[in-house]
Image (cartoon, rainbow, N blue to C red):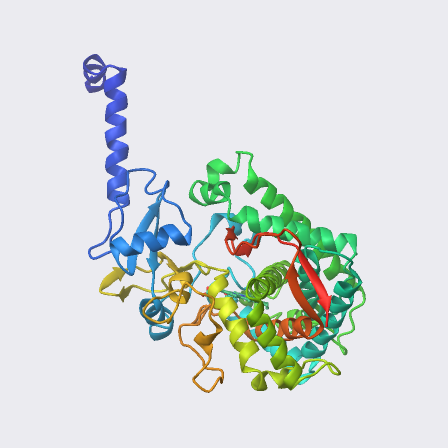
Length: 492
Ligand code: HEM
């Protein structure tokens, strides 16, 4: 009877209006901020700030208006941004256990299924991270294998550069060389720079990382169910990752077939042994499917980052030839031409150390780091951040913090040198982030950067290809990479 009366009273427009107001009310109630939640731009209902860019330049602009701790809403997800050295240090170091979790990022969750080290949480993350860290330590320290592998790869890269006549784009050679270090750790062997299967994996990897920063990928993160059915760059990214996964599964299969538990050669061998030991602890996640994603983690996190940093270094040294000359003078003084650089040389080479650190600061390759979430209810900068809220620490705002760096917008190795020309550490040097989730490949990356860059500059002088206008403007995808450039290498 009541329905009949209502039907008489409302026409279709009134019903739709009524539905809209109901949905609006639900949206307002569902997305109401708790008291003292960090401020942010006005959020239109339903979509939030979906038209606000997620790049670090937009985030820097917003922080000028809303302060070092502010929030933005994409769809129904709220993210708190933390900016500036003081506040990022407070969040990651002082409040060590407050932001140690990863949020669910639909794009990566679909690929990694919550496994791996970089995307897992809780017990499985602790166990997998600890095992990987201790393996890297064992491989690097106890067996001295790592330094030797890098030195061998430096020779291969220099030999290859020497054979090339005329200007060339060094991108794929650098990627192959850096990736080979991770391959030595996880597979126990390297690949030839002309191995088509390996080159294809590198191409897929580079493409997937660029696509992960695309607008389609960002929209997928906001509306995953809808975008699962929509074609676009995110689908290409999924396909790229699937091909990389197949490649990794083949490597694991070969290792299983030839496995000798008494003589582990690499990470896969060590992991297979750990799987047997951990039979009684299934929560720790030592399984073959986890192994696949950890290998992908290593390949992804360990290749793009180091290779991109080396490419930035070569670019800066071509742009500032007087700095390149000083680097070479230090190499000639400390190492000379008759032997290979080794890690023992590093303490005696403050200038090159400063140039590498300044490259990492200025190149800012992961401007927004990697997303995290609040592990517990937390007060930061006087604001309340409830457990489970997504949090992004703006590393770019630390590396360019005007309150810390003397000349933040200039490439200046002097940032890392004291008045006697000795290397000086800076607390705000955070390209690897800090705290519980700090990059676990930091030591490996620092070894690679020192040995590759010193070896290259020992053997060559780099100059731009004729007619090449060098641009310091990066291409921002998931990482901040230099635009492709050509180099001429002159043997020294
Ligand atoms: C220049 C080189 C590198 C830079 C700038 C870099 C930077 C970073 C950053 C910013 C994070 C996120 C930390 C956070 O969430 O607070 C990270 C995490 C990670 N990195 Fe690196 N990284 C580099 C090289 C490497 C290498 C060589 C490896 C290989 C072993 C690696 C493996 C990882 C892993 C597994 C994580 C996830 C850690 C976790 O979630 O517990 N990275 N890295």
